[in-house]
Image 1: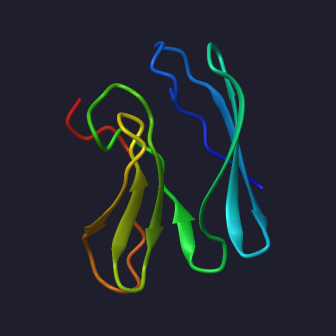
Image 2 (image 1 turned 60 degrees about the vertical axis):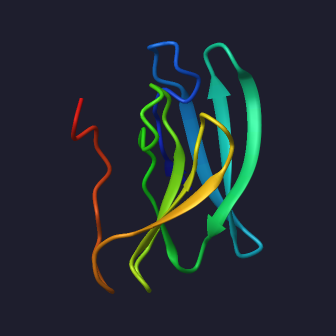
Length: 102
C-alpha cells in the first residue's frame, strides 16, 4: 500500500488516497472531503510508480503513474477523465511529483 494524498476534488483541502496492487493493476482508493468514497483502477503494479499531481492545471490532483520503460507519464486527467501519455525522461529515471509552476 502507498499513501498518495492530494486535493483530488479541488476544494482546497487534501484528500485521503491510498493505492494497492491487485491482480497486476494499481487500485486507487479515495476518500474525498466533498466527493465521498471512490475506487479507480489505473496503472500496472509491476512497472509503474505512483506520481499524482495537477498535470492539467484545473486545480485538482490527477491520478498519474510514471512508467520508466519507455519513459512516460500516464495521466488520468481530472478535468475530463481522459488518459494521456507524456514522453519525458529516459529508461530508469525516477521523477518526483510536485507543483512546479504554482
